[in-house]
Length: 327
Ligand code: BEZ
Image 1 (cartoon, rainbow, N blue to C red):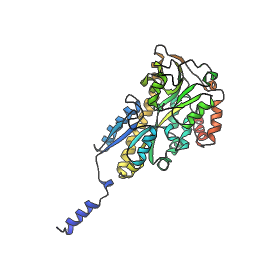
Image 2: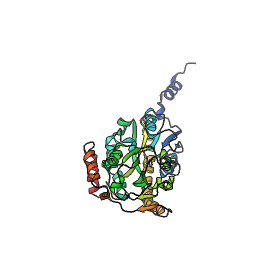
Image 3: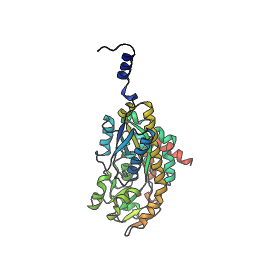
Image 4: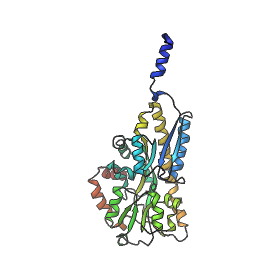
């Protein structure tokens, strides 16, 4: 049957409306390396509720925790192809493709977690997110964090000399590897999901880790010494696949941006509020020996050496140190 007049125009309008402009129900997949107990996972789940509210019930999320979708590198590839909609990845993973992110791992950039939060919310840090669509094929919506990094070991670490030659598990990322090389340790990059077993079977002597993960995984079962170093902050980057983003209407992109940003903010706030309490919890762990307030001097010039090396690679080392100098 041939349609004429108004009927034909309506039919044509319906046929040619781009799919992005039709309000669709959407379940966004979100990949994380962290286990369900981690704050990131709880906030990513809460992000689903927020997106549901902001979209009038159209949007929800399906979480894939604990590296179910593979390593963070694999998740990054899935974001690029659009096989994965979103991921909350460690900033460490992103450093290999966006070198400026390395500056967020500058050792002793900040003295405390409150200042870490301020850096992550600074204009200078957020500028780096703008590079992500081109470099990663993903939109870097915002940063959050998993607190400050500490050191744990199977044997006591009383001085810089004790670090030399120790097989130190690190998150795979060039700026972290550099720091451990400079202090004379033997860095062993490995994903979070392998850390507990590697400590248990003695494959590594020590780890760099945050309080949240130490408590979640119980690393103190096999590492009885904790140095409160606060030597680096440990950011997260909330990413949305560029392909998925491009398929959304501007209104839906805005909903997604707002929902994700809301939960980057609440994640940061939860870490700031919870960090001291987590340290207190660890102080109560029987058999765990804690050395408090291990400062930059413990590392005997390593920070200056790291800065000298990384200033050559990214201007953001100096930019972020300048941001902190203004606090
Ligand atoms: C890690 O690789 O150490 C790590 C990754 C995600 C959250 C916490 C720690």
